[in-house]
Image 1 (cartoon, rainbow, N blue to C red):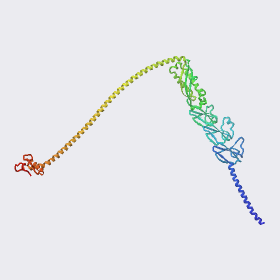
Image 2 (cartoon, helix red, strand yellow):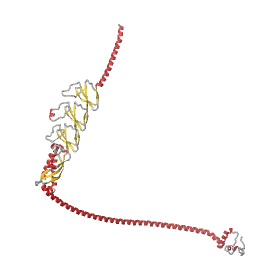
Image 3 (cartoon, one colour):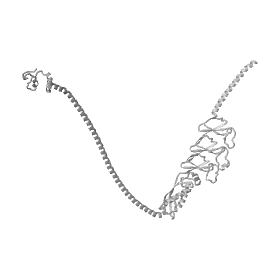
Image 4 (cartoon, helix red, strand yellow):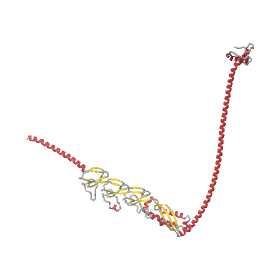
Length: 513
């Protein structure tokens, strides 16, 4: 029995190892299966520009009439959405839907309508309240400006509405369509937060307003012109029962600060004159009424001639301005283009006026001719004066030029005189120098002569007479050269040696050695 027990023990250990290995392999397989299942079946990829809507398959049922689960443990469409990214949800408990983001285009505003929550109270609906408060279904007060938004389309609906644009030269009249009743009964304008037309207007620009809370009416406040001509011309009887027709041009505009009052009291401003309530209800009736009143104060003749036309225009402008400005309408100008009286009296009066004008024109032409004559005379005198002035000017110029030339000549002569004086002085100096040099040279010659004649004088004195000395010198000069002389003692050359001869024998008979 012991050997049998000994052999069963190793067999039990081997079975346990196999079981452990099997469990490990199964665990690894389950782990990889869960990873694969989690990655391929539970993964939610949301790209850019899109959102994910989660739907809980299990949980607490929603109240009757509700479609949005505001809490995570409730069953149904979840309120919160998933942004761009990667998420993992168990498909046995969750379902999802991917939709595009809500986009509000440029120059538009997004009006948000909440589709879950409590219904609006009957009292609020009866009073005109359409804006939902916190936790209520209905239109939200806050709007979305242009852009993209992550909004659950099952929870909130966004309707793009064109933004309010107030152009230059206009103002926006704000009408509160939602809010509480005005505290002041029968008041034309209301305070902020009250239903009705607001006192404050919108200046030019773009505004992102909720049309279920505030509506804006554009009121043109630029200057506008209205021509009263043809069938629209102003007609009234004069004081003498003649029918007068007045052609006028009126320029007017709505006061910006009182635009809400004009909108409530009168109506809209339209480019079409027939539909322009301000023009048809206020300006034209006032213009025609005061035109008849003021125009009937003057006779037909006074309209044709005289200053009654200007008086009528000034009085009419004053009355129209006073009546229209009290209603918020500014009258810029009233210009009477023409007044057409009846032809029965207009023709003779016109002819008389034409004659007067012709007479005045002739007088004016005469005055003009006289003026032209005076002008020509004045111009001729001016020309003469100009010639005189030119002649005087030329004479003065010549005199000045002669004087200048004289001065220049005197200056040149002075220069020459001074130069000649300088040359004279230099010549005198040079002459004196030459004289001094000549005297010096004469003295030198004299002294040389004295030096040369003194020994001669002494020699002459020594010989007793100049002839002897000269004879001595002559003999000394020629004696070395003479070897013999053949001459007649009676000749000039023989006489020189006659004194040396002892006898009187002629030189020709005896020689001298």
